[in-house]
Image 1: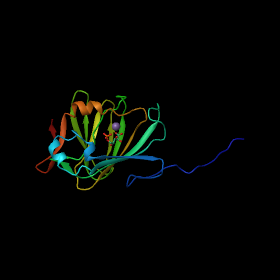
Image 2: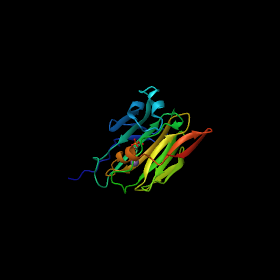
Image 3: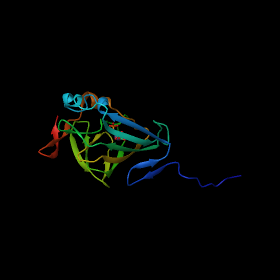
Image 4: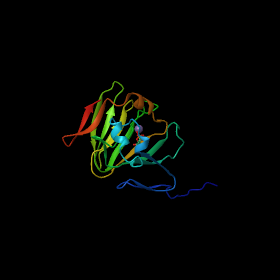
Length: 189
Ligand code: PA5
Ligand code: MN
């Protein structure tokens, strides 16, 4: 006999704060000591408190990583701060399945989403509450917090996209987001 049940959702997600209510989510953190050679001024990074959290990510993975046709959902929170004159930011990556896209959207705070194509062209887009960003396939992406409060943004990406961090750790982005005369500026590497 067929059953026609209505279930409670396994995850609650607050669109205004980016907070989840569920034990089905996975959290990870990046401290300053985890971000060796991510920022240009390695000396300045080493002089700072290494246990400081630069960013954390909460993710909901409803299917297995690598599954074709599924989706993942995550929220990143980047603390305000700078290493030298470079804003706190995520490591940044291409997707391992390079031609897979992603949505980001701003929830709280102010930032810049930095894009780079495979020819090394970089550009930025301001991120603020309600901004929506389509990251096309084959484009590396990272986010910097340019404000005085945590920057919170959401992400939704294909479960078979994966993350390629190696290309960025070898070659970097072609531009870095620095504070110049009080203004966030993309500076050629
Ligand atoms: O899937 C994404 O693009 C995001 O959820 C990022 O993984 C997150 O913002 C952290 O950045 P990174 O993966 O570059 O450390
Ligand atoms: Mn991504």
